[in-house]
Image (cartoon, rainbow, N blue to C red; front, side):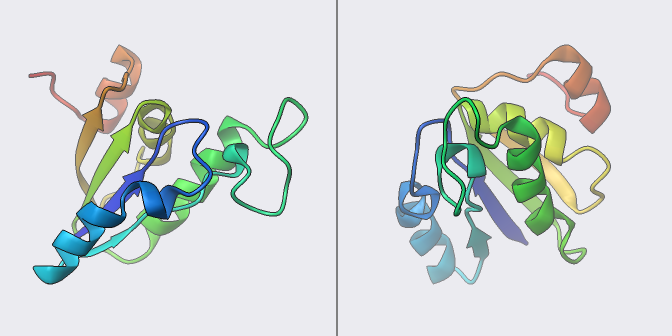
Length: 117
């Protein structure tokens, strides 16, 4: 199993945002990754109205989700839930979405097979 962490908007260092949780998982032999979101200025493009947006963020998250077939849990915070809902559609390795203070539209719940609890 592996975990993919997706931070919310306005965070410039996603790996720092999740580093404590990642360290605890690593102690238990579980790999994790926190992809950089381009809209937050985490790559070489400037953030802002003329910069990258949701499509680029979705692509940045989809890339690690699509690597391999290892069962994957995605933990997303705030805006990261919107990005994750788009990125996870059709990715067979994604087993669970954990949304922390986030929103997942009804249409996306159906598309990714999520049941509301």
